Structures are given as C-alpha cells and as structure tokens.
Length: 268
Length: 255
Image 1 (cartoon, chains in turn cyan, blue):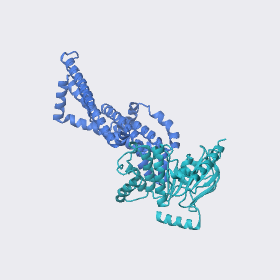
Image 2 (cartoon, rainbow over the protein chains, first blue to last red):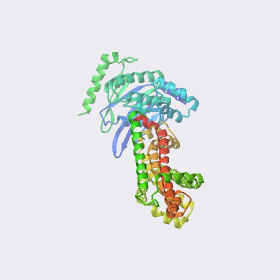
Image 3 (cartoon, one colour):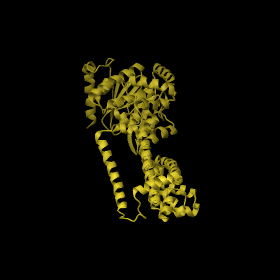
Image 4 (cartoon, rainbow over the protein chains, first blue to last red):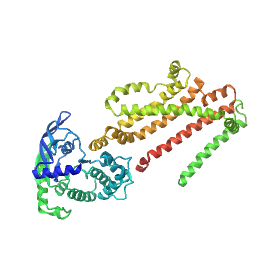
C-alpha cells in the first residue's frame, strides 16, 4: 500500500504535480467563513510550515488537508483525488497529546491501535512496536501508561503511533506548543531526521516563527478573518539544519525579520 | 500495606468486634427478650446448624441466583441501551426526559403490576430485579458514552477504524469506569429486590427464610438469615471492587 503510494508520489514529483493541493478552498462553519479561497500546493517530500496570528485558520487548514473537514467550496486533493475522508497514508499529530492518546492503553498498546487499524497481523506487531519506540527515543517504555510519561514523551508516543500508519504525509498541529524549550528543540531535530530520511511530506502548523523557519522548506503566513494566504517565503537554508548554526545564519535572521514584520502587520 | 494502613485495619476490626461484644452483652443482660433478640452466639449456632442441615445453603443459592440473573440481565440490557442512547446526541435529546420520569419511580411500586402480569413466578422476580437494577447501569453508561473525548473519535477517523472497532476500542474502554460504578450500585439494588420478591412471592431464598423464621419466632434463624444477607452484600461488593481494580489498573497509574 505505502510502496504504491510512494511510487505514485515519485511519479507525481517527476511530473511536478503537487501531493496536496488546495484549489480555491473555502470553509464556512456555523455561518462564519473560516478559510476563504485558499490556493496552496505542497510538493511530495516538501516540509511546509503554516504560521499566523491566532484565529487565522491554520489549524482548520490542516484539518481540511487531513480530510477531517470537507470544504464548503473548492477542493482539497491528495495525489489528484479529492480528500473527503481521512486516509491512512496521511497521519495527523494533534497538539493535545494528552487527549489524543488512549489513557487505558500502554505506550505499546497505543501504537498497536494504529497497527490494528492497518490490519497488521498480531505476531508482527510486537517487533514493529519495539522498532517504532526506538525510533522516537522511547525504548524500554513499552509498558508505561501515557499518564506515567512526561509531555515530551507523550508527544513522541503520538508521533510513533502516526509513524505506525506508515504515512507518506504527516500533518502536525502545533505539536510542540505545550512543551518546554529544550524538549522542543530536541523534538524539532528528531522530526527533521525522521521525515528527511523517509522523504515524508509534512505540513506543520505552529505559532512559533523561529520554529517554522528552522524546520520548513517553505513558510506560509495566513491572514485572519477569514483565513487566507498573506505571505509565502522559501527557506533556502542548508540542510541538515543545526540548532545553533542555522539560527545564527544571516538568511535565517532575514527571513525571521520578514515574517515578524508580516505577523505584526496582521495584528493591526 | 504500610504501618498506618495496618493500624487502620486493626482499628476497624476492633470496632466491629466491639459491636458484636455489645450485642452479646445486651442479649446476656436480657435487655431485649431472647424471643426477639438472640445473642451472636445463638445466631452463629443457628447459622452453622442451618448450613449443616443444608436448608440455609439452598436458600442462599436461591437468593444468589435471583440476584445474579437479574443483575446480569440488567447489565446486558443497561449497557446496550446506554451505549445506544449515550453515543447519539439525538437519542439523548429524545429519550432523556422519559428516563428522568422512569428513573425515580420506586421499583416496589411496579411489583404489584409485575405480579398481576406475570404471577408469583421466577419470571416476575427476574423482571422486577432487572427493572430496578438497570437504571444505575444504563444512566452511568449513557454518561460514559457521552463523555468520550471527541479527540479520540478524530484519532479513530484518521486511522479509518471501523464502527465496531471504534465502539470496542475507544468508546467502551473510555466509558468502562462509569459502567463499572453503575454495576456496583446495581448489585445492592439487585440484592434488595431479590429479598423483596422472595418475601412477596414466596420464592425460595433467604428473604423467604427470614420471613418464615420471624413468623415462627425463631429469632436465631432470623438473625442467621440477616447475617448471611449482609455477608452476601459485602462479599459481592468486594468481588466487584477486585474486578474494577483489575480492569481499571490504568487509572491507578494516573494517580
């Protein structure tokens, strides 16, 4: 399944067609326009960050991409097909890891949920679970309940559960918003190394502009009421990124200035 | 168990022993006529004699059967109906007012109705016990299903889990603490109604035994039956907490 999806993705890349595309997407909820006429294309393997003031619809845009909302007008497509329902190759990392994990299942059990949904035979599950826990830096925590883990560990666990879906695309909604600065930086680097190695496409919503520039190939700034694209900047910083060198790079500082000015302007 | 816990346990046993001693004292001093109040010694003798003759054991089994069947029927129906109502906002809106009317209805009031319709039969007892015991379970299940974290349903959608899998793996385990609490409450209701049905319908059980003993002024036998009913209530409740602790081990981890 995922191999086929990856081949499709490679083909799409050669044709230059986007993996995820918003075409004139509008979303109205309860008579309010949340997103208006959004046009956005995400290429396979690209890391796109979405920033904006609170209430600008960045989480809503992500939910549209996930198929959790259906657009009122326009379309959201995945590999050229309309995204009307969630699909297994698109994994969502929610911000509130405490609510997104099953408190009655251990770390292993939470990862198993995704494997069960993908119909992985039970004899294969344990090996896969161990590998995933190692991948996200949680080896030896298989039998812990989420409530016995720190916030950073819980978010790692949620990421592991998403990786268990073997996604080609990862949609992350302010995943590190509730974590302390040190944990945050560690997880940023881990997400980069996990997704760059497998060429996973990422849409990453954050309110932290530095984080957006540090992680992204491209940063989209949304304007609020209703949500629409206000700025789009390409980040041509060398990879692999480095917490010190990248953040001191003159280009990083220039983009940071540009983005801060944009956000400041939207707040007036 | 730490030192303090052991001391508390010892203290609670001492209090219970004090009650029994006081009971013995009142009986020995004949403050109440021995015809009505036997001492714990006579009650114990009656208990042992009742069991060795086999009478009391069969009555106990009779009551346990009434209780168990009624409670199990209430549990199955209560969880199924509660899940159905609790998982749909529309159903909750439609059904909740009727439930609010039926819930405070004293079950003893429907016993004459049940007798009129079903006669003095085991079926009548099963109906009455199940009807009384279903409320705590059903209401707790409705609450449990209504309170499932919405984010978990989104996780299930993102994983494209089937409807059955969502119920079995998300909704039911999430509602389980509520369901078990309801089942525990219903256990007591089922015991009470078992005894009431046995007394009213003359069905074989401890209720009937207690009634006959009282009529024959066999106060020791009467007390033996009452003690046995108390023990039944206590032990079923303890068994239920053991089950709860095992099924909800994850909650202990959270504390």
